Length: 209
Image 1 (cartoon, helix red, strand yellow):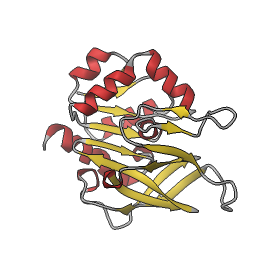
Image 2: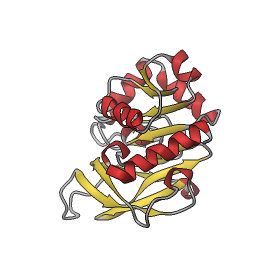
Image 3: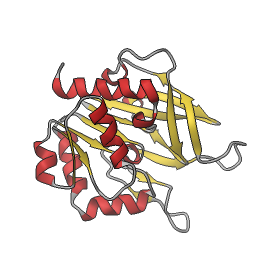
Image 4: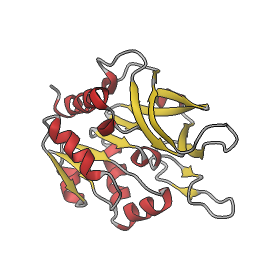
């Protein structure tokens, strides 16, 4: 069973539907016991960084996520579930302050510059530059197109983590991979055949098939 972490963020049901369509048994849950007993864990998320991270902490799920990653359980973070793994975000801060993240990986979540001449948020399809061999991207075409919805982007300090980058006015880190931990800025569940292949690749990591 794959656990999809429920912390009152948006887009969870569409992620669940995508995994079911890909043939994986999954459970939407906020239970620490169910998450820790799962074969793999998915942390989705749409919304404001500060509010969503507070929900995660209020449910005690930040500690659960940290434990899963430390134990190298198969893990997939999506969009905000990618961003919250890092040290802090410029989103939701007041008077120039930043908002703390889980700090599992070193790096920041930064706002796209207002003067880059493009509409923010980035909403729509964009290509990936795949930086290293990664089980999540096996079988994908060169520079695959995926679907983004975001105003903020990850700037990872450890460049060896970065599995894919993209460009929207500026270059940004679009995916990371370490062991069985993967996280992506884009939405696989909205990315057509490419997204379905990514989800199936994660399922293969979970079940070893």
